[in-house]
Image (cartoon, rainbow, N blue to C red; front, side, top):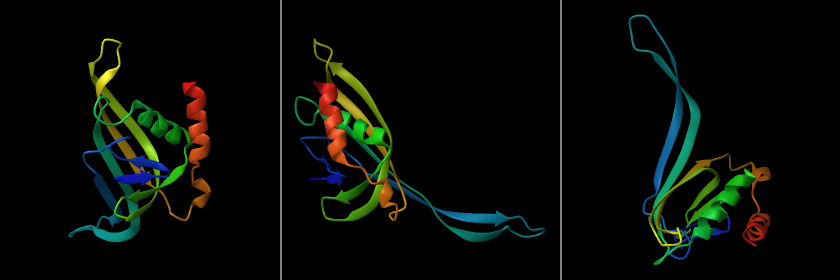
Length: 146
């Protein structure tokens, strides 16, 4: 297991990302002053974002169904706990976007190679009312597939 977002597990059989990019911001207010540098005041935490780019090769590893599950999770608008395979807990995150590029097609139109990027944003960990439930998400996906 590379990482888990809620009950979705990133790995070779689902989605394997190639990078984990994280950007954390802090807010500093600024007030102009005559004859000197602006005065700055720390205003607290800003955005915390994680980007997971990767490649899904259907013949070797991964499944298109995994991208569908991520989309269903994002459709709920809920937050999901993000936990690294090492046990490191990142907190609660929402799925902000998922992009994919399909190339190298089979004769039936299915893609052999799908490059994807998943963008996550951290929310306040105290907002447990925003936690998602994968049970409903999987049920919706199964109904859609059948």
